[in-house]
Every structure is written in structure tokens, then in C-alpha cells.
Length: 424
Image 1 (tube, rainbow, N blue to C red):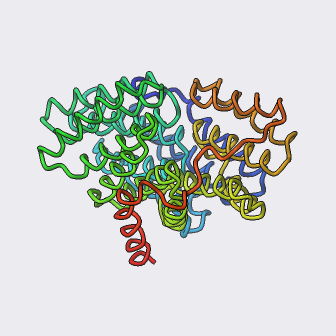
Image 2 (cartoon, rainbow, N blue to C red):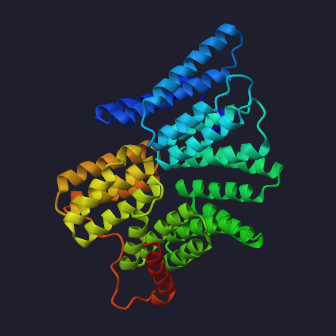
């Protein structure tokens, strides 16, 4: 079952943590390296617990390993958030009996933390450990939750087949316990997979059905998620004003802080598409200044970077690019492609053609490796233009003197200003 979530269960999978420790040490970040090594020894400890070896010798060896892990973690400062997760997991490891419920909760919380930090493959590994604490029989409700989490991680990693299978598994498990929220979220996840693979009609059909069903059931948070997905899809299909309206509807419906920032980032993109640059900049600045996830905040910074290059502000472009580059090793594939595209086109706009070509070519390689077809063709078009001496133009229109979209966007702009004032 665990293989369906996209993470194998053999010891080699924990090499992700060792690789992070090596990379952090090479950059002179000793605390970060010790945290990564701590994650590795904790996962090995949980592995040994789940192997369920019996006998006095095995128990003695396990207790020795537990004490060794605790000594390592004791050497890490208490104010490191990741250290708190690792200590919590270690403290919930049973030394007698096999009540693993507290351990399971600690592992899932740590997986969410890793996702928040954009360490997606590591999050998958910890989630697989949490799933294994159930043994061979996982309750349907828990299976739906784990499958939905794993599906999202795999989708962000562009593991399309595994993500789709996990979303379907989440729906099936949720149906067994009549959990309508989880069923609808599974369907909406499959819509996002279709979108990622470029099948926009199938994605839109699923998202519209989920929005309708969630609204009828009074499930406003799921309804918000569906409208957010529709906003993205409508934008991709060329219905820019309708996309802004759908996304703003999602923003208004949502009561979840993280989801609100995610939607606000999408709203900024929609506003850019119709030329409402001032409102879009405000949306991205709210997100980039918020205490939200790495992925959501970095997406906003990428858009601000692109705005600055399109506006010809070279210093501001470089400042935003520096902010983004600090987290490049934590980006999922689609975000890496986005970075190379925006950095490459930005440099081309400032006349640095050779460096721009280098970044765009690298980005096209990333797109090809991860089957990001839409990105691949975008890179191809811009590179072809550079060969003819044509610098990239801003791919979004400037704001017209008398915008035709003013009636539709006025409510959005006022709402954003009010929100910025209240949150500031």
C-alpha cells in the first residue's frame, strides 16, 4: 500500500536526509546539517521500531539506539522548529507495548512541516513511515487523509501517475466512511493533475462539478478550493476577467489563512493577465510579506521579479531574484522551471542575452526531464526569439488608460486594499 503513495520503504529512501546534511555542511550551515542528520537517525529509529524484532538482545539494541538519538538531538538548540518535531517523535516512541498513535501524530505533523519548508520528497518519506504505523490494516478515514496528502506531494513533484492514483484512493477510502469533504477534495485533486498535464477541458469539468456539489452541501472551504482551481483554469483557457472573478470568490469564501494566501497569489496572476498591475503588485506584496508556506511565498516573489523586469527596474529585479535564489534548492520542478524562465527573460530584457540563453536552456532541460510540456514549449519559443535578436516582451498587457475590465475588477481592488489595511 505504501508504494501507492510514491515512497518506497527500504533504508535507501532515507538518503534524502543524508544528502541534505551533506549539502548544508558544504555551505557552512552546521545547525541545518545537524538537523538533517537528526532527521535521518530518527527515521532509522522508527524503522527499527516498525520492524518489530523480538527478544532481549533486539530490545537492548533498540534502547541503545533510542538513547543515541536523544543525545544527538540534545545537542541541537531548542529554538529550532525542526528540532521540536524530531524530539516530539522521539519522545513518542514506545519502549514497551506497541501503542503507536502518538508516534503517528508526531510523524504526520513533521511531514506537514517538511511540506511547508518545500522538502517534498522528505515529507513523502515521513508520511510513509506514519502510514506504516497502522500495520497491514489502516482505517478508511486515515487512509483517505494519508492518500490525499501523498497525492498533493506527488503532484507538486510532477509524479502525475502516482498522484492521480493516490487521489483516486483517497476518494474510494472516503466513500467507505461517507466523508463528503474528502471525496470532493480527491476529485478536485484529479482536476489539478489534469491541469498539470495540460488536459484543461477535463480539469475544468471536474472543478465545476466539485464547486456545484460543495455549494449545495454548504461546504464553503471546499467550494473555495474549487473556485480557486476554476480561476486558474479559466485563466489558462483565455477567460481572464472570469478567472479573476472566480479567484476572488475563492478568496472571499475561504476562512483558512494558508489557503487565503495561496488564492491571493493566484488572484495576483489573474490581475496581471488583464493588465491590472497595481492591484496585482499589491496582492503579491501581501503574500510575500506574510507568514505563509515557502511555496506560496516564493511564487509571489517570482511574480514580483517578473513585474520588475517588465517594468525595466533592473535593481528591483535583481533584488527579487536574489531573494528567490536563496531557496532554489527547495523548489519543486515546476517552480524551478518558472524561476529559470522569469530569470532568463528578465536578463534578456536588460540586454544580457548570453546569460539569458544559458538560463533558458537549463530551464528547458528541467521541463523536459519532468515532462512539463507547457513549460518546454514556452522556453522553446523564447529561445527561438533570442536567436533572431528579439528580446522577450512582457507576456501580460500593460494597464490601459481606460480599462474595459474596471466594473468587474473594482470590487476586487477595493477588497484587497481593505485586506492589506487590516492585515498591516
